[in-house]
Length: 331
Length: 256
Ligand SMILES: Cc1cc2nc3c(=O)[nH]c(=O)nc-3n(C[C@H](O)[C@H](O)[C@H](O)COP(=O)(O)OP(=O)(O)OC[C@H]3O[C@@H](n4cnc5c(N)ncnc54)[C@H](O)[C@@H]3O)c2cc1C
Ligand SMILES: Nc1ncnc2c1ncn2[C@@H]1O[C@H](COP(=O)(O)O)[C@@H](O)[C@H]1O
Image (tube, rainbow over all chains, first blue to last red; front, side, top):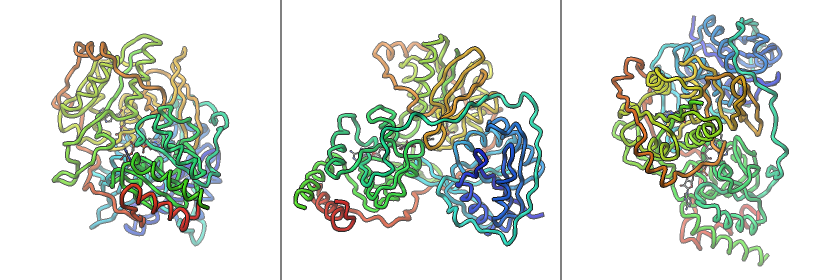
């Protein structure tokens, strides 16, 4: 039997999390490189409708892993269910998207099996028969190629955006779906999750903003936010920030951009003193034009910037405010 | 409540990093600081102790330099510290780091263990969850609030895209703490003085060696990522840059 790759897709309230398609694409790419077989699994109280959706893609088989104990999500139930599935099916490589839910249970699952997870990968390489996974380190300043030195199953998770979900290939015909009923004994699940909720509606909606001036920790002190505000005002734009600025209370939480803040796509995103950590990037990479000012020429933000200004923001911003004002006055 | 806080020393955010000769790790002659979410984890532990009484113990694994994070934590109010001291700890994967911690605290009885939700250097986002599994304890990740109640604790988990969830769980438990859960305090002068007399237990590699094994994953090589996007650099004096940029904003991007 050839080795298999198992992609575990993510569902919430019976809807497939779209990022799962990216992991299917990743699985298909690794299949193409290695000749291994690709299978997928859905875990939930009723997983079969999503399993059917996934079965339309080019995969050999889809498992619908079901138990009433899997709803609502808990790390205990998910780890237990997957442990049983993996013991029965023996895949070589298990792939998942690096979501908040996956980070919550996959280290537990791997540890329970005496295995390891290469987490938050952005790609893979198949070199001389050896599979290595690329992941960011040091907040994206460096990348590392990482290999498994342990036995299968190998676990790897992929960062949001690492592969294109719309590139997931459809199958010639629907793949077979196998329902796997798992037994989760009483007492296994210890946490009692309550309803998921959203905090009271945000006062500031940046999703419609055309111009955003965003500040990061490079601004150094709360009082310096003022110059960013002046630039935003001169440009007729809105002020936003990276998470640490909001964590420190220098700007309210509803101005935070990123995976735990707002996702924006303005015409212009001007990043001042923001390093470009992935959790920030996911919230603004859809901006039409990105201009970054950072004193560190190697800052990861420059990898996605259209225009890069390497320098001290306190030198750059004041004359910029003046020039913008001049230009506006003249028009 | 007796709380253990795992605190890691990581290269300072602004530190320019260089690869070492092996090209599998960085040159260590950079400045270091405490991993950011770990500072919030310590603050939360201190607040819980202030509310419910108890003890706050901090632990780190790393070379001699990493004692600094323990000293700072003691100065802020932690009661004692444990230092797994050896250069070799830097190279452990998350599985082995957690195993080393589990071995070092085997004679202790904590109600809670806090870790940061991820480290700035490795960024595994795993050590806390692995430690929970090794200890056989429940865990919850990306925590923004902790409330003790009769049966255990109620925690607030941050989910993606602005969603949250409360989770009730029994003790003992491991929680991975998110930055921003509270407001950090500064060490006071008195605190810094008192820290000198607080107990700091050192644990050698040899003591925990029997508990740890070979790493299960290996960094083959470390490198500066290749740029994929065509970025145009705007250079010159600040006023030249300002002029060039405004020209682009006006005539190419047409936003002003
Ligand atoms: C689960 C999770 C969720 C997260 N959610 C978010 C989120 O939603 N949004 C978010 O932003 N982050 C989020 N983060 C945090 C994220 O990982 C980073 O820590 C954060 O984005 C870094 O913010 P920063 O770029 O402002 O600070 P830093 O990383 O400290 O960068 C500061 C930058 O400023 C530059 N600089 C310093 N001085 C100057 C100067 N004088 N002139 C010019 N440049 C200067 C430095 O070179 C550096 O690049 C999350 C993290 C996790 C783990
Ligand atoms: N060497 C270490 N010393 C102390 N704490 C650590 C160490 N490694 C990991 N941790 C803790 O585990 C958390 C998650 O780290 P990681 O799994 O590497 O992302 C960190 O925020 C720390 O709280």
